[in-house]
Amino acid sequence: MVELKSPQEIEKMRAAGNIVAETLKLVEKEAKPGVPTSRLDKLAEDYIRSRGATPSFLNYRGFPASVCISIGCEVVHGIPSKKRVIEEGQLVSIDIGAYLNGYHGDAARSFFVGEPNETESKLLAVTRQALERGIAQARDGNFLGDISFAIQSCAEENGFSVVRDLVGHGIGRKMHEEPQIPNYGKPKTGIQLKEGMTMAIEPMVNLGTWMVEFLDDNWTVVTKDRKLSAHFENTIAITKDKAEVLTIS
Image: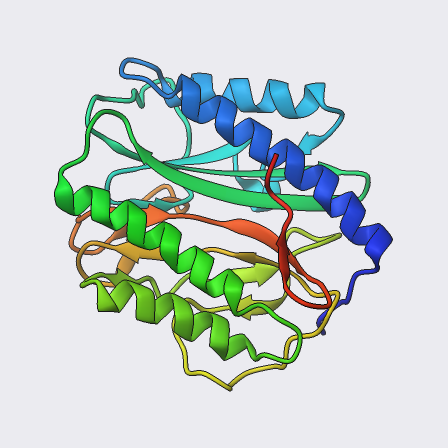
């Protein structure tokens, strides 16, 4: 069942989303060659708690860190570690959630440490554009499939693929709520969107195959062909006329 949020509830989610956006900026700024990913995790946790919130991901279904840091062919759910050190030229994806006053915010950004080549730069640009196109379809009266189709079309028109085994999701009082939001689909299918729905839309776009697999830690998801993957995500609320992005600062 999809839970609709009141304007007051969306305001609380906006506050949580603001903390997420601020934390993402802070972590990206400090993601430099030689920095262990565990240091970025600690930095994020300290900042989230300094704002009166708690990290949504810490201990969620047993996840052992406050943020997910995925590098290179890792799609999502990379576990920060003292042994995992950022290197020049790497594609880094950071996913952060914050819980404040009973509501969650959730967002992710990908970026290169150093200068990407033309194809790598295009992968980032297309993934961000896929997110924007998906959000543009999140309007009262549209269908869930309109979001999915917009994301898939954007990626595949540019020669990339979208991950099919992982999806976006509803969000609010719980980190994961209904509906699930696939990054592929057909227009005018699925549930009809309504004012008050809140969602985390998150295209995961691969340089090669769409297929993925889990590593032995049972968390980290990697591309099956070990080619690069990028991930952008925002929490949005469907208002009367459009989707409002809540994870901005």
